[in-house]
Image (cartoon, rainbow over all chains, first blue to last red; front, side, top):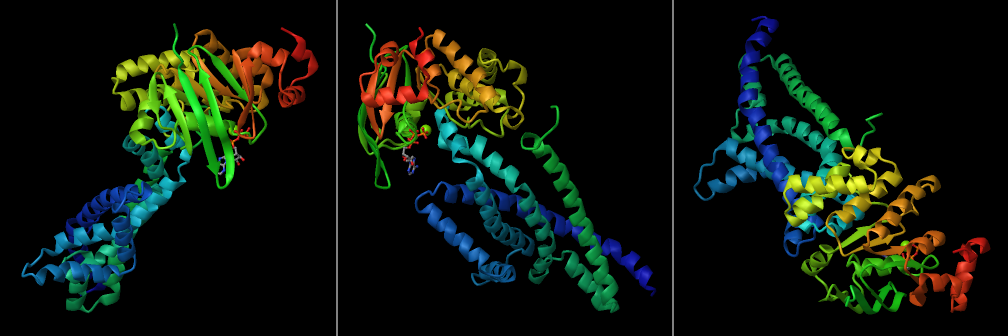
Length: 224
Length: 255
Ligand SMILES: Nc1ncnc2c1ncn2[C@@H]1O[C@H](COP(=O)(O)OP(=O)(O)OP(=O)(O)O)[C@@H](O)[C@H]1O
Ligand SMILES: [Mg+2]
């Protein structure tokens, strides 16, 4: 079979698992990661007794161990108790927990970057601490963290290929399977690389639009 | 008979071994405009911050609007109770950077006091009008000049109808040509009868706007009194020196 023919025929067989697995995995995991990250960041920022300590241990352990190992532990851990987990569910949870730790640090760093005066002004107009977080500190921190968070997300799209190790048939595993049958390794891996690049490019475009929208209050709009 | 609005006794505060407030006591009656002056490092900002519970004092007593507060050991709830009755204008404005001028004024009303949005916006519009900022109510702080930001900050402090507004050098971060508009706004507030405590380096403004002067140095109140007497006949040698250094003679004699 001609290489070009193979590439064309394999394209849907690679991109379909991409749309069915890689994309939902990224979206679910990242959304969950953001929730974990915000909660963790606020706990550390506010230095909540006990919880802040636990949050720091969580960040320390996640950042200090390989993602692949975390996936394995997440997948084989339940098996030790006789539960056969669903690979996709495990992947979503492990990616969320992993990404959550990194994003927590990103967001917390940006929260620290918001001036103390904003917090004090919040108190002075009669806002409670949680309300100041929600209406003042977090929105500003998010604006500052936005590029870095998107960076993490783009990174994660590619990391999802690791989920193939726990039976999730995402794009990379699909590619490997075709390559194993046809022995056309290089063209197929280049093809999947191209598809990852497409996905990342779409995210970059979304990032650019998002930054424009968020830019309202800290970019100079001449004559506005 | 009017009751004292604010009474503080024996306020002490030490920052890493430096005693910044050495037992400050003062009281304010409703409607008074008290100006606090003194050299840099005298503890004026610290005093204001302790009075509004932005800073924890080491010791002291505070009675505000008939209620006792602990300026040394307060928690968030106690501070929040006080903040519902006071306004504070910062030297560097501290407008919420992610909120428009209008939202800066409404946020405390809606999220802090549970007022409905419509009512809050009505009040905010009126406050912004008072400070001459109604035209720019949908601008973000970054797109306002310092003087405009400070006027919005004053509108924000006014919005919840506080019993007192504290000003910490409201014009000292401003370019000289912008101080006038802010001072003018404060002058107008005086006419509306609101109680104010203003830390300022602008002696002529203090003299013009205040009903009472306080001169602080090295963490203590050196002299205080009725504004006219304070300038006409300062009792303390250091007060005299301070006034002499900061106001020229011609200005000292008028009025
Ligand atoms: N957070 C702080 N930590 C340590 N020292 C502080 C702190 N805040 C103020 N100080 C010190 O306390 C002293 C009084 O400061 P404060 O800001 O109250 O003076 P001030 O009268 O407002 O001066 P200025 O006219 O320059 O504003 C200064 O020596 C200052 O360095
Ligand atoms: Mg000061």
